[in-house]
Image (cartoon, rainbow, N blue to C red):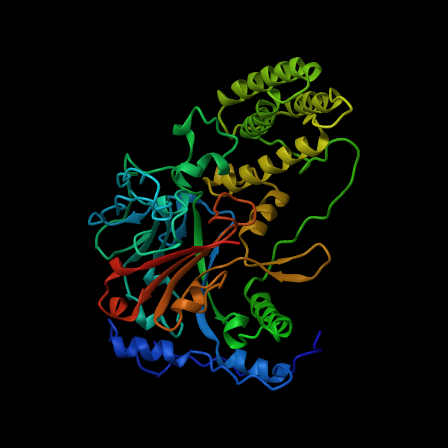
Length: 497
């Protein structure tokens, strides 16, 4: 759109300690030091031109002047649980004996009509665990001296704010616990009142689990070890140019800057698979379904479609739907008693496809029959993604069952950088600490001048690690609280499209 950007010669990186002054700063930093850190990286807004937006060269200069260094958190795929990492996403905290699991607060939806009868106050629950960061493992970056130099930061979230449609800027929606105890680390036991992932909205994210069996909803996300890389981040375009006139050029510049960095950081990026059209049901991989949990998920997903369609089906379809539903529930019950990751034989795999394709063959011509290849192919794909994510986070004997396509699928869902089908590279979603956060609506713009973004967790492309509608979860802390190590004053925002 604007031609090649003459980035010029890049200077060799200079070794540094702490904040770049050549000395190791003391910790905790003073509030003045924290405010200076924020002010040093506040973008300078150029005055708008009388007739046209700033040139791309002027925008490039503004963008690079406004950059903030961040630490990108990259999930390791596959991630062997037996390695006992101390920096990871999902699972349960791996902490010292002094650790106490944080609880939420009694909560009432504040967005309801004030003239209506207020709902009862809900009792507090234990907060859900998101991730743990071992401070001693963080690489050197310009904000590292603002953080504790030892111990573990554990991030938690309260699902009540999501399920009640409360304001997504809430001081009590999350918690950060600094576990700096000495001694051996152990995996924390899950509290009895820990809600399932996504709280009361679990049924929307785990459609393959029967609503009548809520105890089966997972209470922790799949666990993946984290590795860290330093990266430059840039503010959103509306901050530098409130008029929006230069947004296309701005976005193109930032996208290219991010590509240049991510290309060096992600040495072997995942690739979007090509779409191959073939007759019948397209199979996600040559060995799919690998294990019995694939069968269980597929049968239950399709049974859910049938259950929703029986009541509104035509009389001639209703009896067929009932018979199909009974067949699906029978297959699901048989798969449920099998070990979930027990592999299928070639004969069992062939029998499954023969049975599954017979469901498509039974479809009547007409509008409304859900026994179509479109529905069934969608269930195959959903099961493939869900189980691949589960397997990649298990012990080595289970993770090793994934073939190259399965590993690529998980990496594609969680990688900050990937290759599109057309061969072009694309920045993906990323988890990070510090730096400029994703400004979906206004949180990053609102807090960037007064708070430090302690962490940002993005939604996965396919997995259940999701915040609203593919949004971001961000933890903000003001300068005084960070200087005093008071992580109880963390502000949490959730923004989605």
